Image (tube, rainbow, N blue to C red; front, side, top):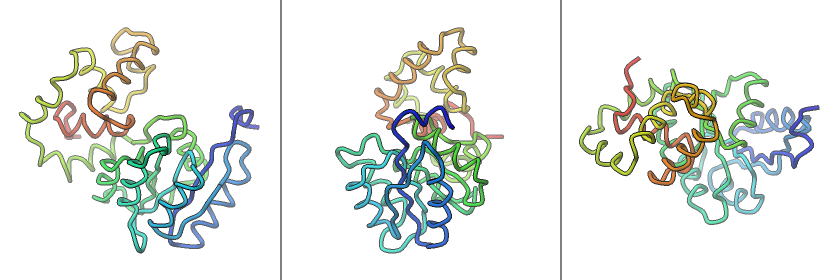
Amino acid sequence: MNPAAAARPIRVLVADDERLVRSGFTLLLDVEDDITVVAEATNGVEAVESARSARPDVVLMDIRMPRMDGIQATAQITRMRGLERVRILILTTYDTDANVFEALQAGASGFLLKDAGPAELLHAIRVVAAGEALLAPRITRRLISQFTARRTAAAAGQERLAVLTERERQVLALVGQGLNNDEIGGELFLSPATARTHVSRAMAKLGARDRAQLVVIAYQTGLVSPDP
């Protein structure tokens, strides 16, 4: 049994317009002791309505759906009062999908390829539910390089970062490189708790919803280079 099973199960909403995909995810997740599927949605409108009524911990959100796409649904859910703790995991077929980055900007906590294995999917849900970002640095770097970094002015980036202390900038740069709190602490000779405090302060000052948005900001402002 998973150690997390003693606590309340992670409540998951599956949003995908393909019935077989929804059924497959639901069958896989419901056999886990620490995860339960509380609702399914066939389009973005249903996803928003189900998130409001079911109050899941994690939404598995497909991008391409009828009526309302996953990006619009993500933006609505993340801005809805009472759903601040809902984490959204974007499902995509391609790791070079420009829409993935748009979804991260809209408030998604990470993304996962649809052909990911069962173990990878379960890990992703648990990571996102715990409040961490699920962003593979290599893929994230490529996405941002292709679709956003070229459009970001360095001067605007420096202005946005002006609210941070020098230590908070250092921490933000390491978050952008994909490091967790333990690794950040090791790099800067800080305790993990102190590193977590700096991350939280940077999030508050920059208006970031979670670590995923901190990663986006780190690249957008030029604090982390998008070059491989």
